[in-house]
Length: 312
Ligand SMILES: [Zn+2]
Image (cartoon, rainbow, N blue to C red; front, side, top):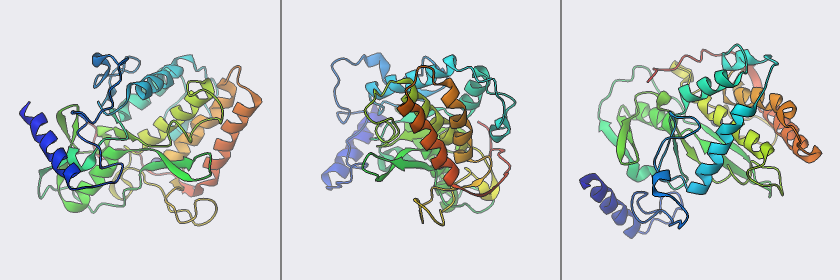
């Protein structure tokens, strides 16, 4: 209770200072900053996934978004991918449901909401922490377009970004989730943050968020983010490359690793047209457009050692 009270006080102070940025202006996720939802069950918030136990939702994930993510994960159960080409991109032998679940669960532990306030919930756990070699840039988000052709972020691997932040400053950071704190000793803490575009930009226009196609598109993003928990030394978190031409020119939205996050996402997306049973021509076209988009981001990709800095 004391911890909650302290967090609330800090948040109150920040709010009172007049920070207007949407990402930072929210009040405590443990306090009255969470929009009240009369239909929400109290037990829904801050508890593990029922579809993929091992993944915990932070209280900042709204219940409607959590329900959609659970449906996304559940879609894994209906996949029947017999073509194992590109399996090496993920470092697996096949795309069976059990294999894909294991891959995702090894790399995804926590999902936090867009309102998760890093300024409040990321703390220095230890100064002068020895990470070994020098850190690198923390480009670990997934960008796409919204309907107005504006580049927006879908998700980001916040745990990997904070690992790299901590490494750069020789500080061990810890991140608050549901009132407890997790030391960020490796990107494999698997903490991913939802962003504005995940349920808006990454969908077939005019279709239900829960449609099979939209679930498949979001599923590919979870695998993308999962890959950001891998890699080591100068390729820790397998960060993006800055695009040298095209739509994403000068943005860190390209891929230099043949087995990096965009490559993993691409490998999944290429399987999905055949899995999209009952999908319309428009829906299949959207998946194919996503495939072309990911392919356009590959810049002379080469295989990189995906061994993580450290397993949990
Ligand atoms: Zn990424």
